[in-house]
Amino acid sequence: MAYNLHGICGIAAVMAGLMTGSIRAQEIVYEVPSGGAFIYSYITQGYEFADGAQLGGTSRYAQQMSVPVYSDISRSVTVTASLYATAPFDPSAYTMAPTQPGTTSGPVDLMQPGTPIWSSGPLTFSLAASDPFTPSVDYLVFNNINTTLPNTVFWSVQFNSIGSYAGGAGFGMIYRNAADVTPVGAATDANRFFVRNTSVSSIWSPSFLPSVPSAYTPPITSTFGVQLDAVTLPEPTTSMLSLCSAGLLFRRRRA
Image: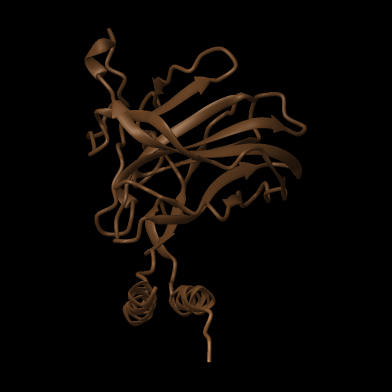
């Protein structure tokens, strides 16, 4: 009886992927938790906003990124999310320290966005209006990232268009406290984030809150809210790989 070895190995590989893939669970590798007091930034359409993230946990195959935003009315927004490797940043190159007063530097203090790793391309979201008496947030969720990340990354969002928005109050990204970042091992830099106008220049400029608002406890830092989820890439099933290798060797000897 003749066997199609290539077909058997192909089926084995698919089955191995199904068996291992079905038990993989997403792990939060970086999160600035929701809840409690927050303030939001005014957004300029077309500008890209980035913040650094030292990842916790062990998973590095990114699956999903979720970014909270505040919106006072129902509106449509078109957004591009991106992930970057790190590049060196030199604070001493600035005449005034590009640092939020009253904050402590973190592990990405001397880094800025570098080489692009992944981009979602422009995606459109419909946002619900927040209760004016109990302000809440909505979430921009970017799925199917399917990209391996380094241990430290920069993530960004660029608001390509914002419906019913004149560039003032009523819509923006959420600032929170860098000290609240989870899980264990995850961290960021409370001092600053980065901004650029991609229609004018590719250069990133540091930006930060002018102070720690005293009305908020714990304090709000120059840290944007986000959640990054990842999985561990499955290892090939050893026995199936061994079977295919042995079969290929058998065919080679008989040829």
